[in-house]
Amino acid sequence: MFMNSGNFSSYLTYGEEDLKWQIVCNDAGYNEIVKGQTYPPNIEQHPEGFKSVGTGRTLNEFQIIYITSGAGTYVVEEKTYKIRPGSIMLIFPGVKHSYKPDLKTGWTEYWIGFSGPYPENLYKTNVITPTKSHFELGLHDTILYIYNKIFDQIREQKPGFQIRCGADTISLLAEIISLSRNQDLKSGNEEVVENIKFILEENLYKNLDINSISEKMSMSKPQLNTIFKSYTGMSPYQYFLNIKINKAKEWLDLDTYPVKEIALNLSFSDPLYFTRLFTKKTGVSPSKWRIYH
Image (cartoon, rainbow, N blue to C red; front, top):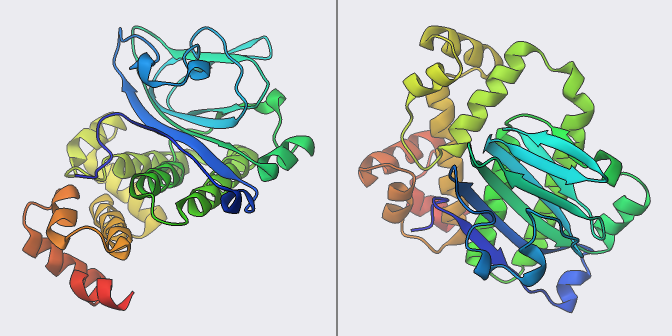
């Protein structure tokens, strides 16, 4: 099984050819920290320099940490920030910092660690800076999508995966900076739509429960559907099917997993229904997509 469920972490290696691309990924992971849980979890599995994240540490790499649920604190440059769903922490090499979830809530975190001349140049030219290392961007499916794309590539570790991970990390940085600059222009309904997209993306490997989404958004199902469709041109259910099909295309392109396994991992209990849906959405069957793309 290769769905993004349960905790995941990986510490990576790279070669001289990877460094020629000016950015490499050193580590990445995903953790669901339940309330009352010791932080960081599975501390013995982390390198020594990473273990003191809750009390104070200095790294020799950049990191981007995205919190999607729960609450906690982040301390950097003698400032303390409250962390909530949608918070992003941008960690800089040589800058002491600490962060940890609240024991009463826990949190869900995604992270990527990276280094190289490209991010160092962004740092030197103040495109990114420790004085602006905390972002309250909210829940965005685009950010979550990039993290999951990186995780998939790390799990596969096919030749050239470092190049792809590095490119995706640059995309992640660009998305964060862009969203930060445009944050003030966001309308209330646009934020609702973005939150719904995020929930759909985070539950990509499950079945859609529109009732729980409407409850979480504190609105009726008709109201939720109307707002979402006015921005996207489709219902949440159709949007959900589309992102499932797009994920299936990515896995088919990897040419590693059987069609039946892809269907099951995307929570299609009937692989034949998945095949019919995929064919309707793309014009070709999953097996033909694998051959011709």
